[in-house]
Length: 307
Length: 314
Image (cartoon, rainbow over all chains, first blue to last red):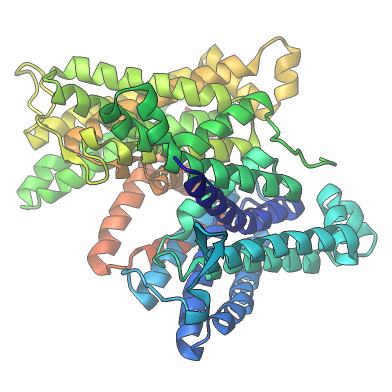
């Protein structure tokens, strides 16, 4: 185990964390403001990826593809909110979970009909496919650094929006007492639609950005959705700070576990046993972490205030 | 014993299910015996979920975990040469109950969205564990070497005998769960669902009762898992896929939450519909998804709402 490998895996972990943060931030905002459990969030991630690949193909520019995919995903999100989800805000979580589960089945099948069940693979444009050299012996793919940078930029942007702008003030107020906000004359429905659109755009951005590096296929949003759930359960539901912390922790633990658990175990138990136990344990690591966090702090690491 | 609407529905359902195999053979459609056996196995799972969901208010999005635990227990024992059915099925139930105890001891402390997410996440963890267990088939799965043996008493290779065994178990499970929810124990979990603070105030600790219900439901679903692996004779981690938990949840809602008999109707309706739709188009989920949304939005008491009034509990 050398330093290069460790550095590389830490960067990989941070990049996974950035992707998860984009997903978890939308999920936690939507839950915090509207009290809506939205399983279909993973579908917007998938939509973002498919739309980005399609627009990339049409325009020949990845940046344009991603930039077009964002408003398109947001539009789909707003339409879905208007048609199906509005009536769910007052319902209990069971109804929300089931209805949005139904939406997942619908979206996965819709994607399979339009684009087929076989995964799509795209190449990065030349200017993004290089590597960045750090010192003499260590280099890292440029595009992964771009994903990481976008994640950091969005995190800062979200923080400024929530903490410093009028919209952010309304979002915070809506999270702690929606009835009072409505009574003060704020159009709460419009606020809900805005927040929902923002959340779907973030999920779409996450999907669009990973489209050139992951396989784009029907159902690709489901595992990410469940990981994002783990993130917000660890971080504390409704808290953006918690989503950031949770995403970084989960990204790191998952990536480092997959890379180093097997060699680490091999030093403790026999190599053949480590060969089979390592990957099994690595894939369970984030869930065990979640169990440990929740056993100690049932509300997560950063419980949202005001509820 | 008053013959309420629900009892009539249950009786009619059992009679219909009992008459189905001879009818299917007469009509030259033995495929339907297979389909209905699958329906009844999932009905057992759905009834067990209804115990904690409908009466205990615990929205578990991870019920497929116990199907998987039951199926893995049977297959692993069979791999090591243990084919005795009673032993295998007892192990399946025991393993599922232990698993439910482990998952429940963390998740039952929480409520609402946390409970949903934790049960979902743990099931996903077990799904990944199943994928990485190469010894037991890994991602591709493996064949069950031999169906559970009952010493010549019942032969599971005989489709009809297996069918009636499943039917008998289903009736036992429905009546047992019914008994349980009407008992003192059941009253406590129902009380804790409707008002936790008052339940505490009269001196009950809901956590222990809820956990016990969670473990019992897990055990029943483990039995369904043991039946399912004998039904398909093929073990795969897909048994624990999270959409399967969603399917079982849908069966309960479609049939009627908190009604014991409703989930049986739900399993029947969903699987028959699935079968009909998939005969019609490969993309049947594009119909099923919106249907699920509509059921949630407009038919809150499910099929039970059509057949009997709320409160007609006998």
